[in-house]
Image 1 (cartoon, rainbow, N blue to C red):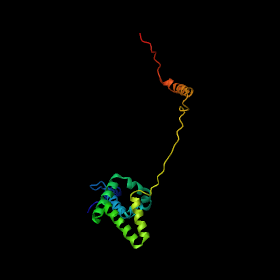
Image 2: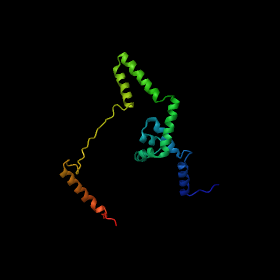
Image 3: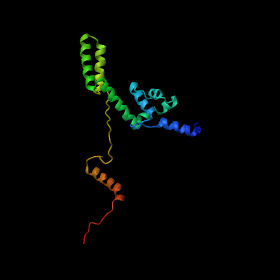
Image 4: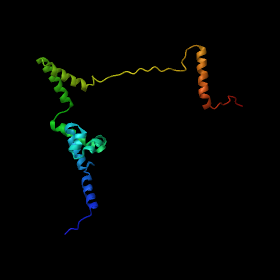
Length: 172
């Protein structure tokens, strides 16, 4: 008969089993999270499906996505998913152009507009572009007259004098 282990040791063994990391540096639960995340790109739902509790999923889903090993694994899974589907960005763009042309010819303008909208998003045509114009008031550029220039020179001397070491120009 095997002697019973204390509960603390059993708990640690169980903890170590669930916290064991694979060759990619992820626990089993983190690996499941990655697989679930690429299904719908919803981190909270993926964490819940991976077995995390509701509160834990809500609090930590964003942290999971910041975890370096998890991010790398998600990228790997996305790449394999695209390879399995034998599709890439160029394929999608070519198909969108064909759909836009065909649906416009057929008179289905809603589908044509949607295809063109997706193409525009890809080219970042609909992003807001803001131009910030700032007028910088220069305290020293008050004018071009000799008096203004002299006043600016005096201001600069007052600002710089405490930092400058005045050296006599005489040499013997």
